[in-house]
Length: 493
Ligand code: HEM
Image 1: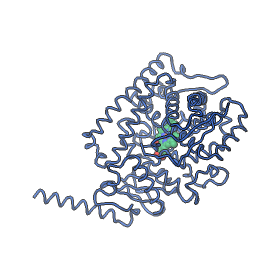
Image 2: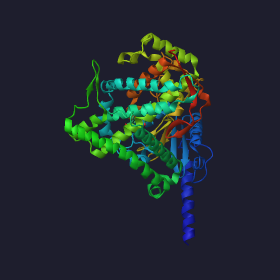
Image 3: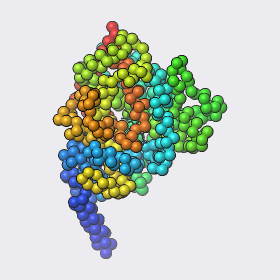
Image 4: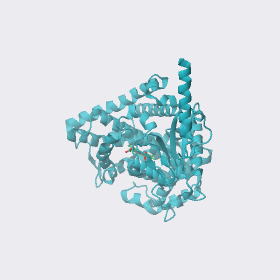
């Protein structure tokens, strides 16, 4: 009797899923799905290299289907959006994140990327001023100092053949982020930097593994899995590092008062670490408790270092692959700095127009966050279909970056498309930082840091490489599998 009931229930579920999947009002489905498991068989057991190939295929299929498509992850219907207008509609209509962001919640808690909507609105308003121009201008001294450090560390590689430059950009970006978040130079604490990076990598891998296995999306099943045990071990170390620094900084703040860490460079803007702003909001305005400060700090560390390091790495690789582009950057640097080795100033940054176009184009070719996610908290009417409330929507940044609006040479690295009137007249054109109200809070911080670092590195070294040899993989963000693709030669003999 029980067996019959069970069979009937399974058949009933299959019918419901089948009916939903053949509903004409739904966006077209990606080919190759099976009952109940849907497209999950394409992901289970797939390595992270395959995951990137698979995501790219979905993005192209989605563009061929008109920009919106459904995929079935187990019994779940997940929407994919690569049309730029529909992307913006979803991004701005539904602000709640999903998938990876939900999985990262035990670690990042109420940090901006993982908090629920009510908390997010409140906290984003409090944190936005920390990323205003006036505030981030104070970081320019740090960015210059860190760029000089990178140039120095690269010296051993000059004239020595190809090497993995990602190792250098990662270490440097992690130190920079530690500095701007905690207000401390961790350069001499290489053990801490290494362990932090290792555990962060492990954590990202765990999130990707969970995403690939639909049964682990259920919190109850996940709780008993070996992956959850790994997550707990990893988190223990990451949390321990942040809590130790936080405790120390809080004690200093309480002892010395709120202005102790604000340094005024001669003639320069004030430098204030993010943690000091968070402590100020917590202590003076009772805005956060200790756990919330820890969650914001970890979110900024996670959001801030790997992203900038990767964009830096891809940009250097692409510049090395196109000698004409490198020549134009050099001409621009020469016109601003001449032969001087001086620091980059605020005024210089707005003159580095071609360099900015190169960074934008690198982020279009290699979007380090190829997807952003949303949970649909209402039905969303798009140009040609309606997305149903309650489902997950994958916003394909990679898809928007290959949309026909970029013309027939969309695959080509061409920084000139960002100059003058040739950029598509579309608010989603710069999709690499996300768009709309949940756009990356660190956007202008990142551009400042990237331009400063690249100006220092490229006026000191001639770079050569071949990006077409690079194999990429998904570790939440887009990463190279191995990075022996560039060589550098000193310009100064
Ligand atoms: C080039 C470097 C960076 C790239 C490409 C990047 C990309 C992104 C993307 C795609 C999103 C999601 C937007 C969405 O869902 O619509 C995001 C969110 C976020 N990013 Fe970045 N990011 C970068 C640098 C940074 C930096 C330097 C920080 C902090 C220091 C940061 C902190 C954050 C935070 C906190 C969020 C969540 C914002 C919210 O939901 O309110 N990011 N970023």
